[in-house]
Amino acid sequence: MNEKKWIVFLYGVFLLWFIPIATILYYFITGSEPLVDTSVNLYYLTLPLVGFVLGYTFLNIFFFIIYFIAFSRIESIQHEQYKKLMHSNNSLAKTSESAKIGLCSIIIAARNEETVIRKTVMGALRQTYKNIEVIIVCHNCTDNTYQQAQVDSDQRVRAIDFKTKEAGKGIALNYGVSMSRGEYILILDADGILSDDFIEMALPLLRGRYAAVQGRYVPSNRDYSLVTRLLSLEGDLWSTPYMATRSFIDKRCGLGGTGYVIRRNTLLEVGGFTNHLVDDYELTTRLLKSKYRILFAPLCINYDEKPPTLEIMLRQRARWAKGFIDMLQRNAVERTDII
Image (cartoon, rainbow, N blue to C red; front, side, top):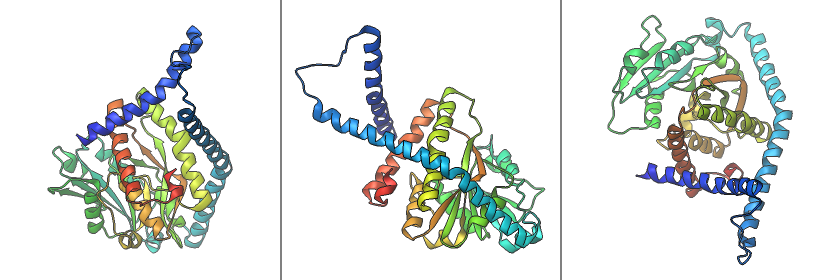
């Protein structure tokens, strides 16, 4: 019932967005203005809305200006840190050298993902950084996810058939962390594919107060449908510029739920994962309140799948909307993070 309520809420937002556009089109076609009533003064209603739209527009312009300046700089910083570590260790890709840096545990929480999980696991095993383990927590699965996740030929892979009365990504991730041995934890969704040098390029950035590194999303199903094309465009025009700008300005880039590396001791220090609707952003707020910083790493790429249909997208956004409003109600975010 709650999910339906939030989906109705999103439809209402879309309707409010559509009405002025339809009115403008109607005016250009017919020459008349159907929603104008000269006897009603809408000034005090429309002025705040216009102010909000203008403020949001200028904010986007600001983000794009900083993004064009910052993106190449962020890439250069990542290259510089990687070269320094390579120079001091000769080759981070070699098992003997990567052992000096530390074990990285790739944790995948999966529920009924039999069609994609094996591809994800095999992709993780292609990492140039060899000191890894891959833990797949098959949480309350009713299909063949557990069977598909097993790779007997590689001892670094462990598939776990995890059954609980409660459901939730946070429960599966915490169990995966408890079963892992790595100094670093990489969180990956069951349909994500990492660039081969993801870990090798990310670990040099984890120093000082930098607790986590968020990789860049690149859609793997961009051309699947109109919905995936639009969501991919959203990532191109908003998600990537936003993460790059925040990382460049104040090192408060947020975690995106998948494709990020975090230091194990820091994760445990702030309390691990919670079973929240926006678990990634909830963890972000706890890290930032503890004065840790998160960096955006554009050279670390996570190829993820976008929701293929409008129905699935609306369910996803309804869950996000409810989760973010819950965060606001609990005063868990700072004013600048509300953006």
